[in-house]
Image (cartoon, rainbow, N blue to C red; front, side):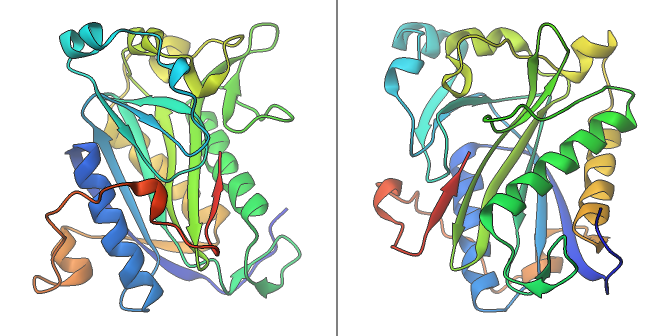
Length: 266
């Protein structure tokens, strides 16, 4: 149980549909600004166009579709510097990227210190569990695995999680299947776990959900779990100003960008 503490502020930006490479460039720029204390903690909420991503621990064999099939379906394949294996992002899936400085955050013991990677991941799972509960979907953790799951006898993954932490600043985050076309997951072995299926909020409830409504639930639960006030912004300029900008070049060889202080988790 989280103890009461002085609330901090998290800025929230809902960006609509963003291609994955642009999302990576934006995250990298915001991480730099957060490390330099030029912005505060920020939460990006968005959808991606169809893409399969490979984390640092990914096995290429977990992409089981042929190049021809991926091209026919219009699915990109990209590497990234988050932890974890292979996953899919696409329309109808709510992606949340927290750009948080874990230094000075309040731990479960009520002490302000640098929040550890494991506790940070557990908090992200808690955000997802609470958000599913808002829509009457029971969700849970599974010991030894990362992410959030539904069901008892047949457990299915409803949300994936993979993070990168550099100098205590986070990037990447969580992906919640809201109205996602689950057929896309047949192109891969999701997160390298062949034995468990993937589900969505739509499948669990038998109806589509407004993504905006789910986004507000996720934001609200970030505020509760991270003991912060959520401030919704209208545009990126409201966060960083028009003069800061986002780099236009796609960063190459992402696996080589990390330093010894970097941490990944998935």
